[in-house]
Amino acid sequence: MTRVLIPSGALGLNYDPEALARGVAARPDIIAVDGGSTDSGPSYLGRGVSKYARASTKLEWAGLMKARAIAGVPLVIGTAGTCGTDAAVDWMLDITREIATEQGTSLKVAVLRSSQDIGRVAESFEAGNIAPLPGAPDVTAQDIQACSNIVALAGAEQISAALQTGADIVIAGRTTDTAIIAALPLMQGCHGGGAWHGAKIGECGALCATNPQSGVIMIDFDDAGFTVTPMADGAHASPHTVSAHMLYENSDPFILHEPGGHLDVTGARYTALDETSVRVEGSKWVPSDRYTVKLEGARPAGCRTVLMALLRDPRYVANAALWAEDIVTKCTAKVLDRMDITAEEFTLEIRLMGHSASFGMLETRHADPVEIGVIGIITAPTEDQAAEIGKLLNPYLLHHPLTQEEEQPTFAFLFSPPDMHQGTVYEFALHHVMHLTDPMDAFRLEVTHIG
Image (tube, rainbow, N blue to C red; front, top):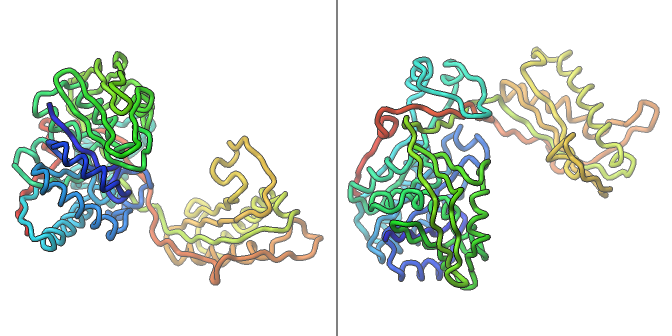
C-alpha cells in the first residue's frame, strides 16, 4: 500500500493545520501539493510569475516542510509558482532555501524543469512532432517564436525520476495535476487505473468531500484501487462527492488523458466504507502507442489600459447597452481619425458590470439594478497608444448622452485619474501535444543540497 497525504488543492490556498497534523500522524509515504494551473489566465505563464502572495506561500510551505521532517518522507510540489516556468521554480527554490535556513535543516532537493527552448519547439513543430488538441488555435512556427514562455506538462514518469534521486523535496515545474500524486503509487506497483483515478480525485484536496475548505485528505493506494479519507473534523467523503470530482475541469466524466495514456473510469465502483471514507475499484489505465506531453505557451497580446465609471441615473441604467454601443462606435471613429493606428491593431470594448458583463449576448437572466459599473478595456500595440486611446475614451464615460438633444449628463469615475495601465497583456498561444521518444527529452532534472 502507498499512502499519499495531500494538504490542499494548491499551495497558497491555506490548509487546516490540525488536519495536517492528523495526516502526518497516520504515517504517509509522501506529501504532495499542487502549486498552480492556468485557471487564472495567461498572464502568469507569459510573465513567468506566481499568482499567490509570497508571504502566504512561504508560511504554508514552511508548515509542509516541518510536516515532512516529522513524517520523514518526500515532499513534492508540482507546477511551482503557479505557472511552472523556470523562473517560478527558482522563486520556489529561493523560498525553500530561506525556510531551510530558518528551520536549521539540511535538505536534498530535486528540481524538475519544464520550460522549453522556444526555438527547439518551433523546429519540432515544423518537423511534425507537435499536434493540436481539440479547440487549439491555428499556429505557425512564427507564432511559437513569439511566445515569451512555453512549458511542457510533466507526467508520472518525470516525477518518478525526481523521486528516484532520493530527494527530501521535489520542486517541479509544470506538471499535470495528477502526476505528483500518481507517481509514487505507480513506482511501488499499485493498480495503474487506481493510481491515476485516485490522483484525479485528490488533485484538489478536500474538494472531493464535505468541508472542502479544510484542504487535507489522505489517499491509500493498493493493487486493486484506492481509498479516500478526509482528515478534518466534520469532513466526510461519500460515493457522490468522490465520483463527482471526475466532472471537475474535465470535459468527459469517464476519460482523463495523461502523458502516456488515458484513464477510463467507466467501470469504477464507489463504496462507502463508513461515514468518512470511500473505496474505489474498477478503474482502468489504457497506455497509448506514443508518449506525448501537453504544451502550454503564452505570448504578448499588446498593452492594456482600463477605465472605470458608474451609472446611477435610472434612464442610463435602463439603456446602458445602447449607451455603451454608441460610445464604442464614436470613440473608435475618433481613434482612427486622430491617431496613427489601424482598426486591426487595437480593440476597445465596454463591459457593463451588473448587466451581462460575464456572458454578453449569451446572457439569459435579467434584472433591474440600481447602478451599473462601466469598464472600458483598451488593448493596443504599445503602452503609449493604449493610454492615448484611454484619454480619448475618458470624456465619453464621464459625459456621453443617450441622444444629441438632451442635456449633457455627468457620471462618476471611481478614481482620479480613472485610467489604470496594466502594461503588457498576454494570450494563450498553444494547446498542443508534443511527441517524445523518451519521457525526459523535454525536461531537465537537477539535484542540489541546501541548508
